Image 1 (cartoon, rainbow, N blue to C red):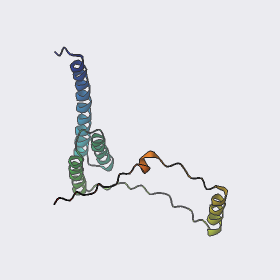
Image 2 (tube, helix red, strand yellow; image 1 turned 60 degrees about the horizontal axis):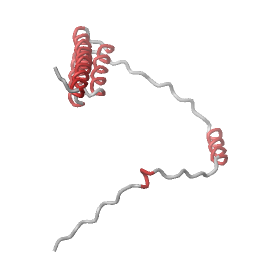
Image 3 (cartoon, rainbow, N blue to C red; image 1 turned 90 degrees about the vertical axis):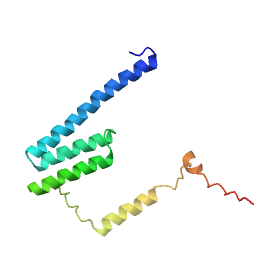
Image 4 (spheres, rainbow, N blue to C red; image 1 turned 180 degrees about the vertical axis):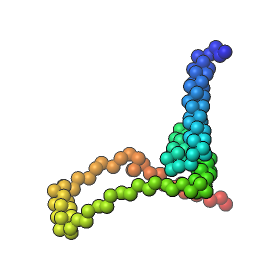
Length: 134
């Protein structure tokens, strides 16, 4: 058992992280097992979503998740699972007069106001000159 305050805090943090990581890994395993038991589009998306969440939280590496997702997709293909595609609604075609008039009016109404440059943009470093030795 640690005596130093920072070591005690570090131990508490480790326990919290460990329980969170175990929970996330358990979610991945249950989602994957659910897909293997009954291959369907919704179980596939759930398993892939859990893998993406684990990558986002830094629990597994990106390529590991990609490899596992590829394996799930391959299994879905052999099982004949069709992925549900969501279609976006078609945009209504607008006439040229309606779109051109508001654009010109908006450009005419806005005065040309320049923003003050930010410090990051102006503080761009130039490459250092190379030293020549003789």
